Image 1 (cartoon, rainbow, N blue to C red):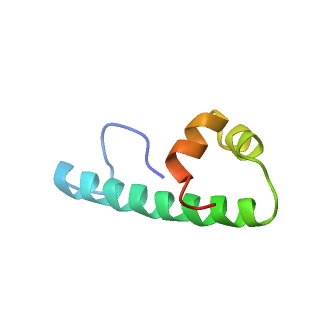
Image 2 (cartoon, one colour):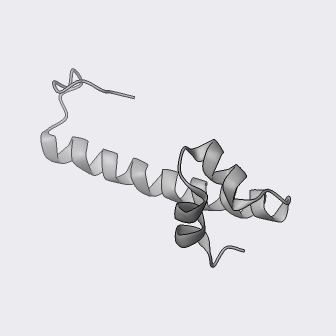
Length: 67
């Protein structure tokens, strides 16, 4: 994953931002699946939040429909 401001592969800023937006969508989808699996496995909102670096309240608010 690239982290620098200057891209060595010739991407334009629009291409780079488009790629980043796609990565964000992929990560959000992966996170939701992982949270659903964790809840079905019996993990609490607090445990999931700790693993993802957020509060249990934030997890519950974001994923309350997941279970």
